[in-house]
Image 1 (cartoon, rainbow, N blue to C red):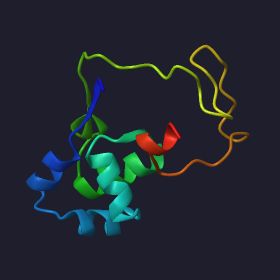
Image 2 (image 1 turned 180 degrees about the vertical axis):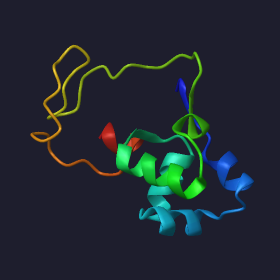
Image 3 (image 1 turned 180 degrees about the horizontal axis):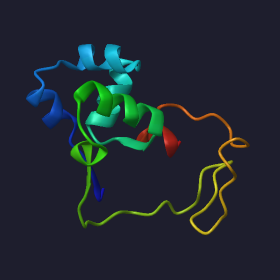
Length: 107
């Protein structure tokens, strides 16, 4: 995946455990682990904002882009727009989970 998640680096710098960070951010340790281990397909801006606030950092400290062989989804999941589709305004969109594990999204 071309987007690399460096939450573990910031956690180590702040000497913070997964459990403590999850509690302070307001997400489950399991969802934080999915995000931290790079298995998430999406993250809400509110979650990213909370991570940055607790870890006292910028989004770029947690996420970085690196060229790689990203495999595009062959077909969008039901109810999701494809790459060329227009996206609905946020107010009209369905609520999404904080973190969507990649394995579950392909099911």
